[in-house]
Image 1 (cartoon, rainbow, N blue to C red):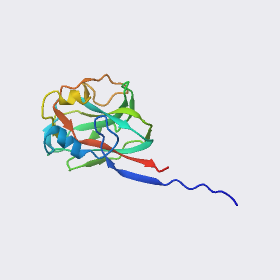
Image 2: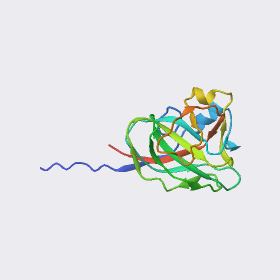
Image 3: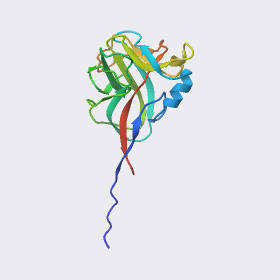
Image 4: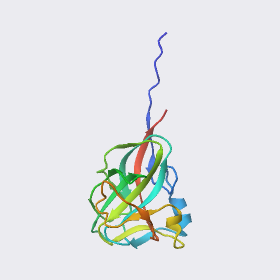
Length: 182
């Protein structure tokens, strides 16, 4: 008798969003709970500002795309990426023209394997156009959740120096990813 190992099958987890210090998951409900309401169109706080928040990967995953939620008008550019905790860029979409739709897929993200660890999901915009997101219920909530920011960071640089976030706006963006079932 000959032993034949079973084949691993790829399973698409879902169209995921990262949450502060949480695993890759669809956490829209949690974000609404922290912010105190539904998402709405809000002006990006400052042109060329990068806003990031920590997330945790608990299994090996491949990130293959990114998405964001736009506000009511087209225009401007954005860049979405992932950084390690030391501020080294792992991957980013590069400058991407901003369109208007509920969710806009960005396919220009190179397939990137993330191992179990903590990372920063980061988005930067070159204008103050409207993006969909949440306003924190109280000043200081973003900082308390580990959110960070960096001025003059469009396009996302290869290394970044984050400071604690003073923002009350949390943009709605995330990544598409999959893992291989074991």
